[in-house]
Amino acid sequence: MKTKPKSVSFVLFLSIFIMLVSCGKQKAKWQGTITEEGGVTVVKNPKEPIYSENVFSLEEELSIGEAEGSEEYMFLKIRTLAVDEEENIYVVDERESHIKVFDRDGEYLRTIGRKGQGPGEIGRPYGIQITHQKEIMVNDGGNRRASFFSTNGDFIRSTNMGKMFTLRLYCDSKGNYIITTAVIDPSNTSYELKKFDSDLNLLDTITTIPGPDPTAFNPFMPIFYYQLAENDNIVYGYSKDYELQIISPEGKVIKKIVKDYDPVEVTEEEKEEQTRDLPPQIKFDFSKYHSAYYRFTLDDEGRIFVQTWEKEEGKEGNYHDVFDIEGRYIAKIFLKTVPHVWKKNKLYTVEEDEEGFQIVKRYRINWNF
Image (cartoon, rainbow, N blue to C red):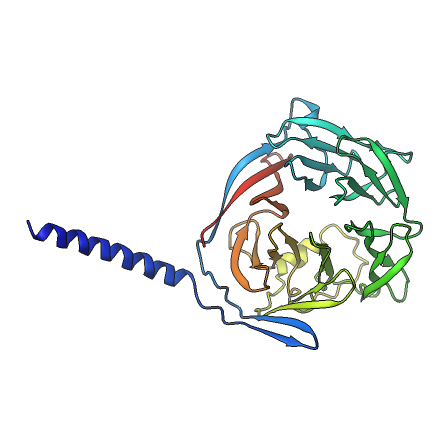
């Protein structure tokens, strides 16, 4: 009779020990540093994340899209997505030049805009944003303007961008425009990130980055990328180095996030893929290595997901480095498709079925830390 309690105690002790060992293997002490340099917080990260494995998983919740059937659920060429606070989903169809809206259960609600040049019409949509004023802003690259609609689909107004070719466009909480534009010059093409007020008066030129070499094309050259955070900070990076900058609404760099990494070599298969459908007279100048990373996305809790060039053998997709709101490298996760929206602990993506038809999917995110 006395041996039974000892056995239970031993099993309980063993279970706790295994759990602690398991947690110990999963989480390591962060080996980075946080310092102040010239009034800028600099977060330096090591190659390895805090959490080593099994910290992230996805559970599919919703799929929208049909190859045959109702036209409301068919897409020709999805450019991007947006999701509002009620979890309604706004799907930008570049070829149809309109936005289809679905509720959180995937039921079709309405179509916003149509192809054209008139008020409320869209030439070629490059992007979409649900603004702080609860309006839908469409970056209409075809008509070189920003068009605004109500969430019910009513046209409100538009802002003509003049001669600017707006590659990316955001509107902050004060109605200012954050714009990426290309400065085309045969001898010196460049890209500029600028901030304008609502009347398109220039407030700040945040950065200027050189464009591609006109004499030899490198498809793997570093690019610059940015996203607007909920608090109007700009998260900016130029992938020549693994560094992200957090820029305040006043245009000041307030934080730098740096990470050590191993460069990924450009493969012969990647080179062949880039040259396959292009005229033979185009001269290429391939780099030996990819840039430090490709692009990044933000969630509504302050995390940054950096898409790297690292892949898993035999699988479609890329690894993503995850940084917390402090800028610490916390996890390395694998995603089979490009993330479009992270919101309310859910991930929204655009994928293809076996026949190549596009589908919008929503996943519930499970964090195991």
